[in-house]
Image 1 (cartoon, rainbow, N blue to C red):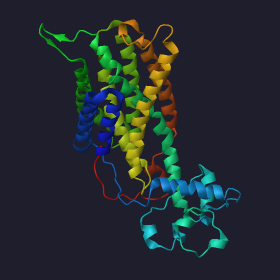
Image 2 (image 1 turned 135 degrees about the vertical axis):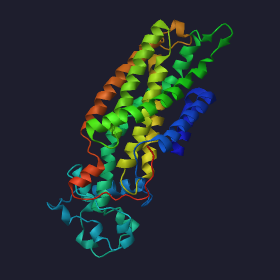
Image 3 (image 1 turned 180 degrees about the horizontal axis):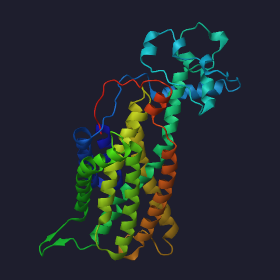
Image 4 (image 1 turned 180 degrees about the vertical axis):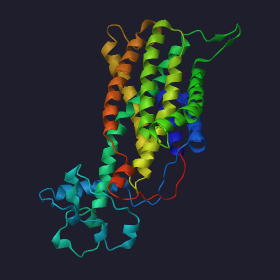
Length: 373
């Protein structure tokens, strides 16, 4: 979680300077406090790491590729699994997972080779033979990736709040009374305000109602939280486009701040819960990568739009009064809408890990629990 705060600050620094970076770190600190102190549901954190997650993923793919010409047995119990591992310590650090029919090509990584029976599991052999549980853990990561990819767009929208929305604010009347004027960059304080407003409303109002309706002790599931955040991001861009036309007020800060409260916590909750045992370090990395890629996509869109429109009526002019910034916001709203449809499709077909294991009659092993959201 601390890494998430630092990551937000770093992204802000790269996008809009030191002031925005400090603001991002402050916002992350607020969310960090909320996650630990104000959350209503627990996230299991398992600290038993079994090597590098990326190494395990690479081993499974390499082993499956090396045995691509072999035929899979009709009975999955004939595949190499934890029961066949002689080292008891390796078995203790893993939870046996049920076989799934998705991504069956990867199952070839667990095909037993009669020539290697009786040999110890070594690093060299792991690149040729993986346990079925290792294969299933890699499949779990693959199931997460579509949801991961569709959350990047939120942070692309978020990036606009520390760049063009601040520039937009410089052209507006920010005076209070006759002698005081609010600095344009200070309007990002609405981020913090909307987060602080949204979280208690969610915790005290939305969660009890959602519990009664869905009979879910968490209220909204992690995927539902993320979905709400994505909807808020669309509202933010629509309001930003309308506001740019009228230059009245900065409602997009409220929408993105509220969306951040849902998406930030929802993403961390989802990745922590759904990453396989022994791959928990990957959960924070998945979250931070969506943030980084979101800022990168924002920069890419700005570059492409500027090159495409600069010779006619520039959307992103140095002087906003001579540009068509609202067109850029409409483009982001459209892209966010398409992304939301893709997200809903991915989320609808996703089955949570605990439910998948329960259907197979396996109890999820939970160790070293800590409340994060």
